[in-house]
Image 1 (cartoon, rainbow, N blue to C red):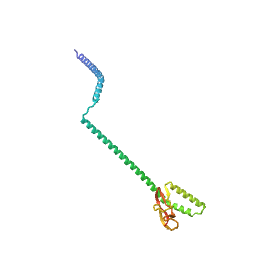
Image 2 (tube, one colour):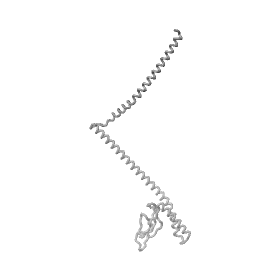
Image 3 (cartoon, one colour):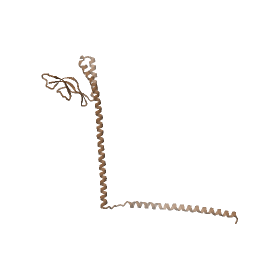
Image 4 (cartoon, rainbow, N blue to C red):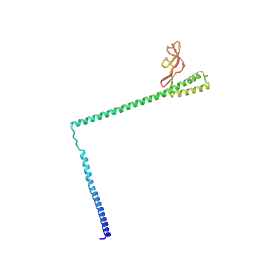
Length: 214
C-alpha cells in the first residue's frame, strides 16, 4: 500500500471515531436528561414525605419536660410583664416631663406679662391723675379718659385686674400708708385710696396704697 493511501485511510478512521464519540455523548446526555425528568416527581414526593414525618400529629412529653416548658413560659411571662411595667413607667415619666415643661412655659409667659405691666403702671397712674384733675365736660379730658379705658381693656385681655379697695383692710392686698380717725367708721375700714393696686392672673404685682381707720 502506498504512503498516500495509508494516510487517507488513517484520516478516515479518525473522522469516523470522532463522529462515533460525538454520537455517544449526545445519547448519554439525552439519557441523563430523561432520567432527571423521571426522578423529579419522585424526589418531590420524597421531600414532602420527609417534611410530614418531621411534624408528627401528636407529641408526647414527659412530666419533667412539661415542668421545663412551664418554667420557660413563666419566665417569658415575667419578662413580658417587666417590659410592660417599664414602658408604662417611661410613659408616665414623659407625661410628667411634658406637664412640667408646659407649666414652666406658661409661668414664664405670665412672668413676662407681669414685668411688662409693672413698667406700664406709672402710665396708668398718670392717666388717673389727669382724669381726676380734668375739668368736667372738657373734650380733651374725655379723650384722655377714652385712651385710658382702651389701655385698661387691652391689659385686661392679658389677665390684668385692679385690686379691690372697698371694705376692710387686707394686708395681702393693701398697703396702709396712713391712719384715719373717722367717727362712725368701723376700725380697719379703708377710708381713702392713694394709689391703685393691680394683679396679673391672680398674683399681686402692686398692693393698693390706702388710709385705714383706727
